Length: 312
Image 1 (spheres, rainbow, N blue to C red):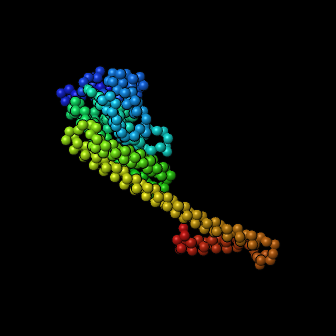
Image 2: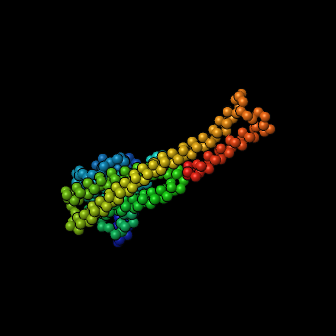
Image 3: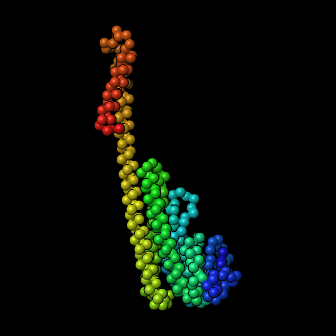
C-alpha cells in the first residue's frame, strides 16, 4: 500500500498523487506491481524498493542516478506463531531520497514511522536530510522503549520463576534472550552506518544537522550498551536458574532415596520373618501385629532422625 503525505500550513494532509516535497510511505501489504509503478513514477531503481523484502538486509547506504538509498534496522514485534521464536525482531527501514521526494518502505508495521507521522506537520519536507535525521531519531527512541520493555518483562518472569519454577518461564526468558541478540546486532550495524554518514557527508548535512547526527550516535551507543547489559543480566539469570533447577533436582532425589529406604524396612522385615526357620514368634498370639508394629516403629524412628537432620 502506498500513501502520499504533504505538509500544508503545519498540517499533515494525505494526497492521492506524489507532489514536490511530499513524503511517500509504503506500508504492508506490499505488492510487487506497486513497486514497479512507484519505480517508474519517481524514477527509483526497482532494487531500492525491493530491498525492504529481505528481513536480513544490513544497514548501509548507496547512490544510483542521484537517487540515494539508506537502509537502517529498527525493532518491531514478532508476530510468529512459533513459541520458540523471539518476542521482538529487527527489520530494515528503506529511506530513499529522490530529487523531489522522500520515500520510506516498511515490510512490517513500524512504530517508528507511526511516531514520525504524528510529528510530520512540524517537519520541512524540502529539507530531506533533516527528515532522515528525524526518522533515525524515532528509530533509536524505538530501540530504547523496546529495551526497557524487555527489562521489565525479565523482572516479572524472574519473580514468577522463584515462586513456581515452571518451564514456561525459562521459555519466555529464552525468547527475550533471542530478541536481545537481534537488537545488539542491529544496533552495531546502525552504529557503523551513522559513523559512515558522519564521515562521508553522504547526506550533505548542515552544521546543525551534523550536531543532531552526533547526538544520535551517542544515543545509539547508549542503546547498544543497554542491550549488552541486559544481555549479560539475562545470561546470568539463565545460568542461575539452571543451577537452581539442578539443585532442586538433587534435593528431590535425596528425599526420594530416603523414602525408598524407609519403605524397604517393612519389606526386609517381612522377608526375614517369612523364612521357614525358627524365629521365636511361633507361639505368639498375634505375630503379624508384632512384626508390623516393629516395622512401623523403626520407620518412625528413622523418619524423626531424618527430620532432625533436615533431610526432608
